[in-house]
Amino acid sequence: MKKICFLVVALILLAPQTVYANQMLNIDAKASLLMEADTGKILHEHNPNERLAPASVTKVMTMLLIYEALADERIAWDQTVTISAHAASMGGSQIFLEQDEQQSVRDLLKSIVIASAND
Image (cartoon, rainbow, N blue to C red; front, side, top):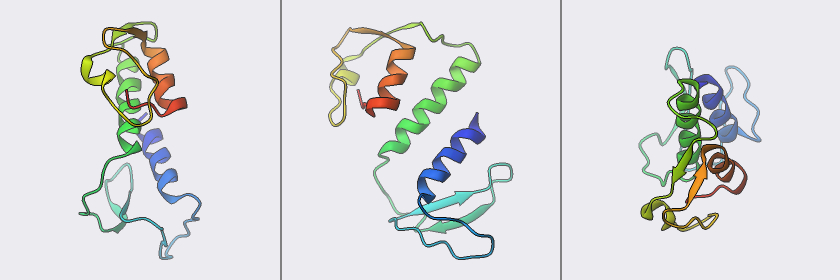
């Protein structure tokens, strides 16, 4: 699962660029990093220490954690989650969850994937 999510993140960072072996990457981004998943070897980096807002990377990592918890059976697709005041207060892209509202893991994951919801 980690390799799949890494691949997705790498493709997002590289799209629509094409990567050729032994050729300089020309990525139009403030910062970028490409790492070989098995060894951790850095294949490409540009401003690796630049502090940037996490944006959608946070959502990708949240999805990774959800899928790992599902695989380990720590949570289930139909398990009910109660929305916290903090989650309900998130701005930006959202599905307008209310504090103490209850939703399934499945529906909350859909809200991240489809609506890019922050709440």
